[in-house]
Length: 122
Image 1: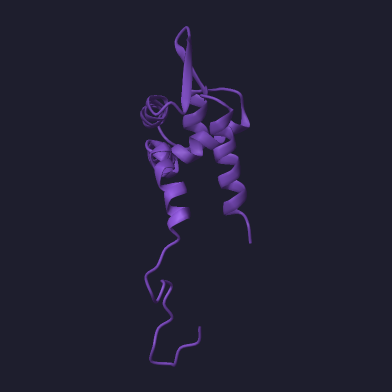
Image 2 (image 1 turned 45 degrees about the vertical axis):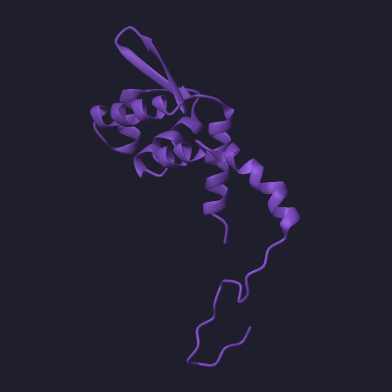
C-alpha cells in the first residue's frame, strides 16, 4: 500500500474481519502455551543466556568454571544457576565441595542453538 508523504503506513488491517473456521480451530489450543513464557523469561537475562550457552558447549561445568567463563563472581553465577534450576532448565550434582551444572535436557540445548542461529541470520 502506498501512502502520501503526510500519511504513515499502517501494519494493521484497515477493516475488521476474521476467518471463523481458523479461529475455532486454533483458539482452543492456545492454553497449551501457558507456562512457556517462564522459559523465555529465564532466558531473557543476558547472564543466564551466557551461562546456558556455555552449558551447550560442555556436558557439565563447575560453578567456579562458569563464573570465570562469563566473568562474574561465584555468588552471581550460583544465583543465576539456581534460577535456571528452579525453572527446570538446568540440573546439578555435587561432588565433594564442588557443584557441577548441566542442561536439564536436550530441548534446552535446542532452544539456545536455534536462538543463536536466528540471532546470527542476516
